[in-house]
Length: 86
Image (cartoon, rainbow, N blue to C red; front, side):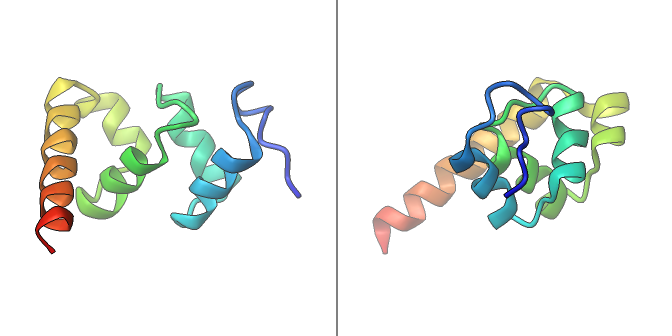
């Protein structure tokens, strides 16, 4: 087991597993945490990386703003609505 508390003190075993289940290793996760994401933001990091094709450097330099967060919230709403209709 790898301890991720050196990335952020709020990392728990459960949060580490969430990041790993989304394909992030400790170093990739650290890149997202350094730019301001929280340990509970694995879903947001996954969406930024896999759906928007963005990396931490780009988000930090050009796009870490309310527009991306707003887009993510819309994505979550649509995803939730589709699951309710299924």
